[in-house]
Each structure stands twice: as structure tokens, then as C-alpha cells.
Amino acid sequence: MNKARLMKTVSESSVEMREMVMPNHTNPQNNIFGGVVMGWVDIAAAMVAARHSGKQVATVHISDIDFFAPIKVGYHVLIQASLNYVGTSSMVIGVKVTSENPYTGETRTTTKAYLTFVAMDDLGRPISVPGLIPETEDEKRRYENAKKRVEVKKQLSQSIVKR
Ligand SMILES: CC(C)(COP(=O)(O)OP(=O)(O)OC[C@H]1O[C@@H](n2cnc3c(N)ncnc32)[C@H](O)[C@@H]1OP(=O)(O)O)[C@@H](O)C(=O)NCCC(=O)NCCS
Image 1: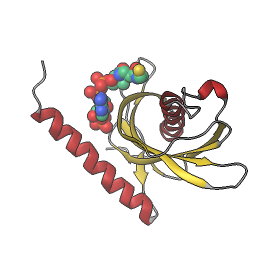
Image 2: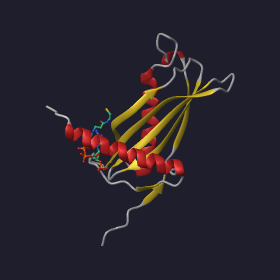
Image 3: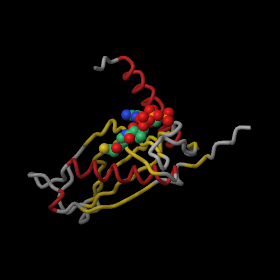
Image 4: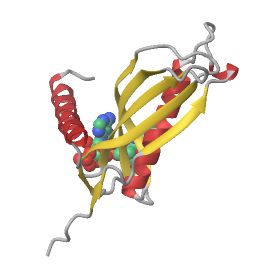
């Protein structure tokens, strides 16, 4: 008899973290260096994947990372990450980065990205993860969009010529 797959909601694994842009995070224009943002995005997404799966996880793919606006030194940075979609062992996490001017309270969405993580067993082999229950309208929209992105990537991989 098949064991029923454990199911978890999006809110059970969502992550929010805050950082402040320090001089060692900046580029020559005194704005945040993109690689620092990418590091924070990867960490937030990794925490979501680990919380959902309860396993060790590894990043296997990052897609559609967009930088909409620079973030100045001294500004605060909010990184919000939540699970959009799960396959068998893979998990697609959406991350939104918002800058906040701490003196005026003005906020701006500066980055969005989608990351795929794989859960692994103790030998580093892919292992199945709980299913996902999208509850809100936003969660359902993100689930459908992420599913399409996964399908498009599979089709693209099959259609392009690799050496
Ligand atoms: C994680 C790892 C062990 C998985 O091994 P693998 O041979 O790719 O495993 P599989 O082919 O069985 O794929 C496992 C799952 O990952 C997905 N996957 C693997 N590579 C992917 C990629 N590049 N993009 C999207 N999904 C991917 C597969 O579709 C599959 O999903 P499913 O289980 O939900 O159907 C291996 O890819 C790895 O070690 N990668 C390096 C990870 C790493 O070091 N990351 C740190 C960044 S440097």
C-alpha cells in the first residue's frame, strides 16, 4: 500500500530576513553589489527549502533574477522568500527584495528571483519532499506560474543543442 504524501502549507516554511547595507557590501557607486544581494537571496531561499523538506538542500538553478533599482549604503533590506512549487525532490522558491530608506520609511522592490533547490539524503542523493498546499490566491498564482517555468525550462533543455 502506498504511503500518503505528507503535505505542508506555504506559510510553514516562509522566511523573512533583514540586512543593512554596509560599506563592505557596496560597488564603486556606493550602491549594493549585486553579488551580495544574490548571496542573501540564496540564503533566504535555502532556509525555506530546508524548513519545508527537513533535509539538507542544494541550489541547482536560479532563474529570472531581476534587479530593478540600486540600494544605497545605510539603507535597510528586507528579503522575503516563500515556496512556490514542489516536484518530487525539487522545490522552487520565489524571493522578493525590498529596500527601505530608514530615515523616511520609503520602500521599493529592488530584486525578484526564482531558485530551485533539491533535498538530499545523507549520501547526497535526491530525496522526495512533502507536497505543497497553496492556500491564498497569490500562492495559487505563484504555484501555476512556477509550474509553467519548470515545464518551459524542461522543453528548452530538450530543444537546444548541447555538446
Ligand atoms: C543536487 C544534486 C545531487 C541532484 O542530482 P541530480 O543528478 O541533478 O538529480 P536528478 O537529475 O535526479 O534531479 C533531481 C531533481 O532536481 C531537479 N533538477 C536537477 N537539476 C536541475 C536544474 N539545473 N534546474 C532545475 N531543476 C533541476 C530535477 O528536475 C529533479 O526534480 P524532481 O525530483 O522534483 O523531479 C546535484 O545536481 C548536485 O550536486 N548539484 C550541485 C549542487 C550544488 O553544489 N549547489 C551549490 C551551488 S554551487
